[in-house]
Image (cartoon, rainbow, N blue to C red; front, side, top):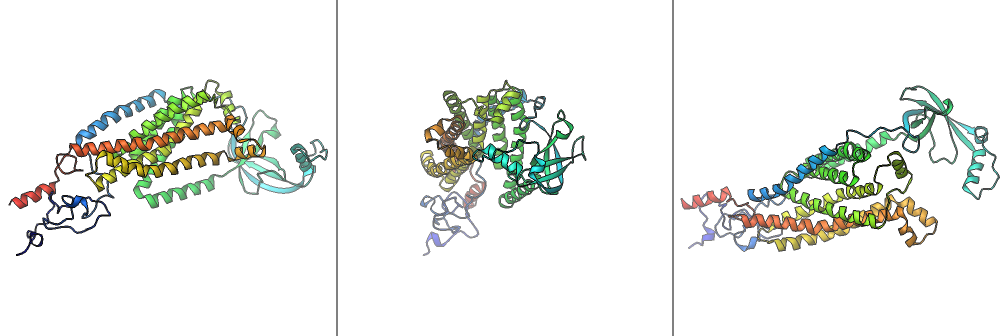
Length: 483
């Protein structure tokens, strides 16, 4: 006499709630069979989900229940509406005009092209300078000697844009100059209309648009080739982020709006657009948005506290000094806080999305796992993420400030003196405040995700992970057996 396990119902590939259903057990579980018999142990009705047939863990997240979606919407819809109101209320309509000073970046520039370059004797083209004293122990002495000795370059440059297009002028390049000109090279020229005619134009930089455009194209192709449609949407979100930065955040700050408020509104808009555009309009993405928002608020509070406590003015170099001179109403310490918030946003998105996805996948692998188990498993993943992210932030800021650190090393300053200087103290506060927010985002987002998926499971009247709805295949299986 055959056992029930050896005599499945004819033509009945059961998908019901019993152990023969297609489960979502962990990928590492044994038994990959479909289990066509009522006693097969390949589903999650028996054997604690030790096996599965056709795992769906790599597809989109299972939809949560309608009630839970309403709860999430009740939190995020007012937040999105507030961001929209903030954008409308603070929209600047463009940067305010000002009279150019001709200092630093605040110069009128045009494009040019090097027509010809010839070698000349430095002494012949530097005849008007004071003769060197011969003392080369100082930088000034060495420059004076070089100005009278060696071979210089005399470049003829043609202006290719602007009202004086076609005009030519001469540029003398010293032998020790960091930027050497070559024939046919594109250059950026500064135009000073109030200067004497022969001194109105001067080369300030080289034109790098072509290599930068090629590098950007390679980056875009790499992202799309690996990320496919998700990569394409990431590039679109990146473009939108730059648009928000260029047309809202920067002009609004220049118009005199509070930099902290502008940064919070702009960062929130970037976060909503980027996350939902890249990861879809789902409960999983919404949890990542909530985790990012809470972490941004923490970064804002800590940044405001320690920037004030450490008496950081935000006015530490020629560029910030120029900004303060042109727009004296700008709160430079608030601008520093805004930079901390915006700089932390990109890494925050990565951490919160990763943690949310990890909890969702853990839940799909083992639907019987409760919120505490999900949190513990997710936080173990998050600890590895914390270690790598903090190291990334510190090294990124150290790399950006490497020339400054070299200057301190040359001066043989002590570590305490270096850290106490405002230039370095700004970077320390920026790094540590951002890192604290990133570290906090891991347990916050993991806890939110664990509560959401567990609440959805608790609400479900049917099998875990179905959002309270019996699968249609399960109902069909029962009807077939009833017949």
